[in-house]
Length: 96
Image 1 (cartoon, rainbow, N blue to C red):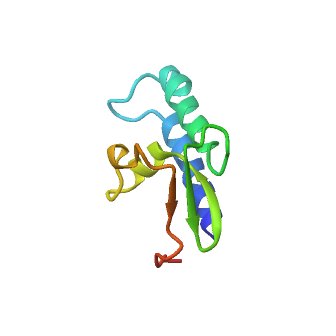
Image 2: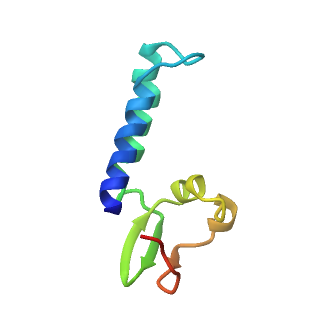
Image 3: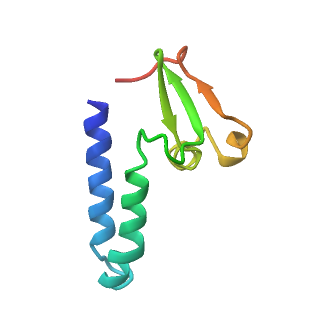
């Protein structure tokens, strides 16, 4: 279920970047840099390539990206992740 949510969020982010809104750059600009950037970042999910962090959750090791974790979490910042190469969250309670 989490994988489906992540895939849906990725598709929505790419679609949002491709749809110009008020005050947005021209459609051509949105279709070039922003949509390509979001597409590249979305495709990094669960990929070893460019991964700079390992996260252990419930006995499973996940490849992660510090900048994504910092962007998605109020608890982590790039500054406090800079010297971290592995997070062990296997003892943490997670919501399903």
